[in-house]
Every structure is written in C-alpha cells, then in structure tokens.
Amino acid sequence: MALRGVWQLQKLVVNYCDWGGSSRGIRAFMETHLPAFREKNPHLEVVTELVRGQHPNLKGIYKNHNERVVCVRNLPPEDILLQATRLRNSLGRKVVKLRTRHVTKRPSVQGTWTTELKM
Amino acid sequence: MATRRCLLRLLSRRLVAHGPQPLALASIASRALNTLAQPLAPHCPRVLDSPRLFPSRCHFATRSSGDEEEDEDDHYEKEGSEDEWGEEEALAAKPPSGKTAEEKVAEAAEIGYAVVGPLGDDEKLFKPYEPVFAVVQIGSHQFKVSNGDSIFTEKLKFCDVNDKLILNRVLMLGSQTQTVIGRPSLPDAAVHAVVEEHALDAKVIIFKKKRRKNYRRTKGHRQELTKLRITNIEGIDKSETAAVAA
View 1: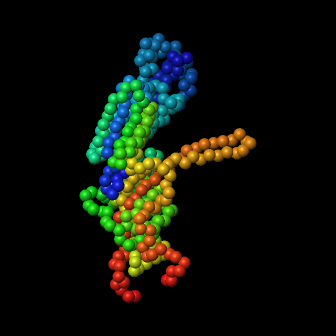
View 2: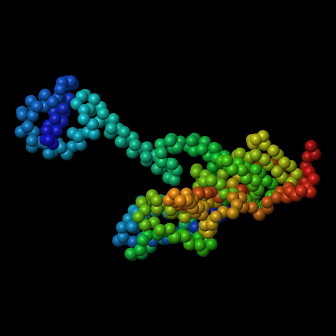
View 3: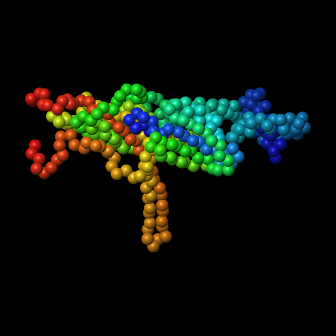
C-alpha cells in the first residue's frame, strides 16, 4: 500500500473491550502480535482504544480520508494480524470491480493502429 | 479392571528391566497378581499419574522403550520445524513443502517471472513518461506496458508492498524508432516494477441453480490481486531519432 513510494495507511485504530468474550482474540493480539506489527511499520500510527460493550474492530484511516472498518469479533489473533496486514497492504480506494487490469495514460507508443495505416 | 491393567503394566516394566523374556505375560501376571497386589496398591495411584505407564499402544516386548522414544522425538521435531516456518514467512504456506529455503523462494518467484530485488528507499524511481513499450508475461498473463503504467496481476507471493521487482520474461520491446521481437522471449531485456498494493478484488457472487430440482447454491469469492507500477524498461534504444540505418 504505497502509491509511488508513499504509504497510504496513516492510522490504525484498534478498538477493543476488556470485558466481552468476542474481544478475547484481539486482547491476545495486542499482547503478542501488535508490538511486532508496530515495529515493522514505523510510518503507521497505531492507536488502541477501549470501547466497552462493543464488538472489537480495526479501523484504518487512509490518506484519501477513506475509512475501512473490519469487525474482528471472535477471531483468533493470527486472523486479526492477517486483517491488519491487509489494511496496511491496500490503498484507500473504494472496493469496486476492476474495469481493466492495465491502467495507462499513454496507450500508444508507435501510433494507434487504423485501417489506413501503411507500414 | 483398572488395577489389574496397572499391575500388568508394572509387570511388563519389571520384566523388561530384568531382561527380554518372550513368555506369555498373562500366566505370569496371574501368578504375580496375588503376590504383588498388596504391596503395590499404595504405589498404584502415584504410578498411574506418570504417562509412561499408559503408552498409546500395548506392547509387551523389548520394542516398547524404542517406540516410546520415537514418539517423543517426533513431537520434538515437529515443534522445532514449526518455529522455523513461523520465522521465515509469516504469510506464506504452512504445509511442509520445504519453502524455508531461500533458493526455493527464488525459484517460485521465477516461475511467476518476477525477481524480488531490494526494497525501495529514498531513490527516485518514478521517472516521467518515456515513449517505450514492452510486452511482459507474468504467470500466464501478458501485458503491454510502458513507463508509469499500473498492472493488476494475481497475487505475487514472495514480495511485500514497496518492493522492487524485475520482470524478466519480456516478449517484445518497442520504441518510436525500433521494434525488437523475442523468440519467444528476449534474454537481455528487463522491466522494473514496484509493488504498490496487495488487495482483494470486489466480491463476486457465484450463484448456481437447477430449476425445478430444488438446488440453489450461493458462494462469494474475492480474488487476491497485486498492483504493480512499471518504472523502467531496459534493453532497447530509447532515442527518438533513427540513430543507425540498418
């Protein structure tokens, strides 16, 4: 997730609850995998917030002011790490079906072919 | 029944300790039960706790000690190898196919015709547009790329975001004055790219129905894609005037 070398994910907010059972995985994630994740991504601001009574989620805030929220209730810590890595790996663009697999601004180098072209 | 079993095991232990005797243990056990029952009763609860008395298989021969050692060794080996895989590649495959070796990683990357170079640092890789194109093959897909283009390919396994790649399967190069056609590929050409993102495509719903047969299935699928940004094309003369008249 880097557009021309610039990382797109600015902030990762980890919301969890200290009482609920659905937050068990994320509490374990915060102890085991989160420090390593923070070290691997020094450009990323990782914030943990305690939200009591709610299911846990990961909120990613991108440079284009897009927010992606992933609910991680009842997930084991490895799966939560995978979701966090996915948020970090993606640009903030909207998830729509791809129009083409090749995006270019200058489609032709030697001139666009026409029926009147003489080689 | 439990005490009888316990006594049988103890007996097998003692017989093994004394020496290999391929005698029918049942007869010995029946004789020994009467003699050993009372003094062993207080020992039984303690001895029952030790797992060595209850191995997974019943064996009354000298192979018993050897089999137990093999089981323990297998457990230790599995633990050690899991740690190795965890350190090497966190996101890659877990099954024991020998992916820990870096040579295998390089080979697998070559199968996808992408060689992972060092990570991009402060260098300015993103040059302005140059009127040069290349036809490059990644896996089974071919693209006609130019400087500054973006390509969406199937997920490339062994590279992270902001990694530099060299796509070495180049089928054709072209500029405003020259065209170089490979048969089937050009050995000296190289296309440099940078990994921009690893993301999931939008969800596609696969819906199957057989009418009048009460059969309906719905499945969601999100394909994992990698977005590459092409930075440089090498192997062709990029000047805009015809320098050499062939």
